[in-house]
Image 1 (spheres, rainbow, N blue to C red):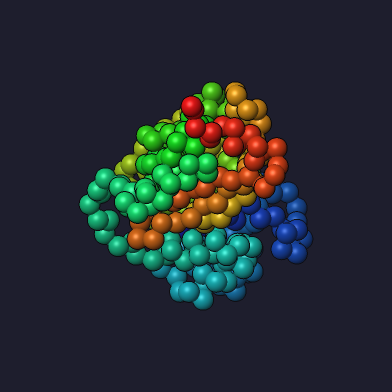
Image 2: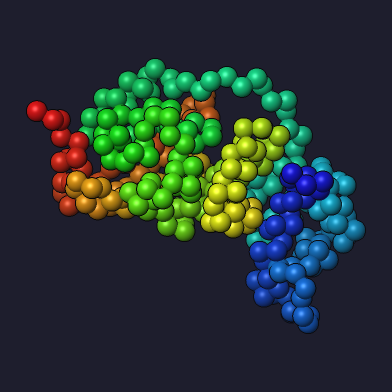
Length: 270
């Protein structure tokens, strides 16, 4: 983390992603750096340029909610990014002692009962904590003990079986950035970011954008399997109440080729 702190780093990174034309400002000649100038952000937010400079340099780390809302509008932040900005301006509570992450018994039983529906639980650091047999059959990435981020950014074999589009990669990095922004002093998170940054140009480029994203949601992904070929599956990501864990469930559209392939893949061996 730089001397300016997570709030200042975030403001600078997001400022560099917004061009004058994006906010209706004239270009005003050649620019040495990308994005908006500091004084332009201050003008759009209705604050003094000196005060904005103090925020970005980390000399004032607790602006009011009204100032944060104005900055979010000036930087064209979406709801997730604006909420993250507010979190960065709060004093972080003391971090409790780290305990091993354990999947609640009821969740384990539920996931295990889905014999034809791939599902797994990953923890705060994207480690797969529990996976059912259908998930194991679908991809080696969805195996207990595997770190999903390491697999998709550092393991070429995993990428072949689990193709990662730019949007998927960006969302994964944004989810990790959300965690780091809230607790920048977490040594395990810092070590994971350093490992991924050192080993993956793609991760390093996306990390520099300072995007953030909610850890829930869903979408569609394509996977390749050596036995049943390509599968186009929907996925749902659900936070498990009272934990920092996420339940991920894959399913196919009814009566689709992918549904038939999934049934073949998860059929019990006689």
